[in-house]
Amino acid sequence: MWIPRRALLLLALSILVARAAEAALDCTSPFTYKGQTRYFGACNTLTGPAALAWTYDPADSTLKVAFLGQAASPMGWVGWGINLGSRPVMVGTNALIGFRTQDRSYVDTYKLTTDIQAGAQLTPGTLDVSVLDKAVEITGTTVTIFATIQLRPNQTKINHVWNRGSKTIGVSPLQHGLSPEDRSGVGVIDLSTRSVIDTEPPHQSLKQSHGALNAVGWGIFLPLGMMTARYARPFSEKVWFYVHISLQSLGLLLGSIGWLIGLRLGSYSKGIVHDVHRNIGIAIFSFACLQVFGVAFRPNKEHKLRLYWNAYHHSIGYLMLILIFTNIYKGLEILQPKRRWHNAYTGFVVLAAIVSFILEILTWIIYFKRKKNAEKETFANGGKVQMGSSSSSFPA
Image 1 (tube, rainbow, N blue to C red):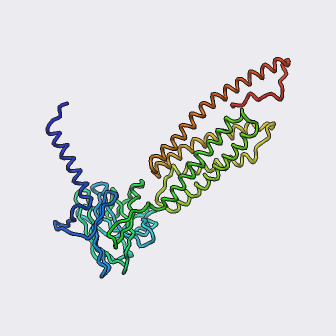
Image 2 (cartoon, helix red, strand yellow):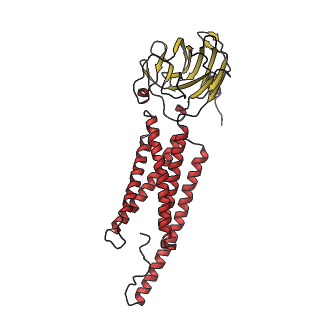
């Protein structure tokens, strides 16, 4: 296929521009401000994409930094800050945020509080650290923040946080995205070794525990318990019931613990709400409690209400199954673990579906066979149904 030379030139130029933009966000080139080169003692490339350079003077405990980041849009913002607490988290961060207003490039200091995380407007404010000077240079969507910060004496490690957004209103940057990538800009600067230590996002181990417990409890044990109740009855009179109750109880225990951890995670991140995932989780837990109460008030087999109780019990169970599978995949989208965990759970769902399909066919075969035998016995006994014969209503 013939391609015009002009199109080839434009394609090559776009590739060169893209590569140049990527190169501008690493530590291979010196930093410049108003045409003058600025050198620093250490530099590290960060995720974002972003880069951080700094020089630390232990004599007076001052830190000169240059943070280079890519705004999410031409009118977006880039921020970097340090947290004097024990962990590199958003709340408590003393931030420098740079962006472009209608008439100039702008940088100021912002204190990130729990109110800001909950959605309050972010405005310039006083920090817990002393910023001796600050400046910003913006080219396109590339924002470079320069600052000199007064640190505590003998401070060798600094928790730092960075992020970017797509819009500002006046001098108020609007909230950044809430994807895992948007919340991964955290780390620790080791001034003694001139290195940046990557750290996990806040409460990552708790998030993983929440996901694992819910996936195993709600997503594996409960479906297995339901399969036992549905398909093991033709082969045992009582064993299936005890296996069913055991699997359901274990699934309820693990799922409830995971659900409580989810509530705790919600209290840690009031400004980050996954409405669909949360609401489905609440519905699953509520239905699970209804099932427990339903078992406690289950009518006898001979009771006239038993038929209606069976319909209720089965309907809630199948509804829970749909909600459980939906919410686990919602959780995987939020947590974004390694791909093998997503594939492993999908493999379980597919395998369970195949086994259920095969067992469903066998169940109906057994049902019709028993029904036929029951009709033969009834005919042989002159039309009188034998009370001890196997029930023909099993698949219902």
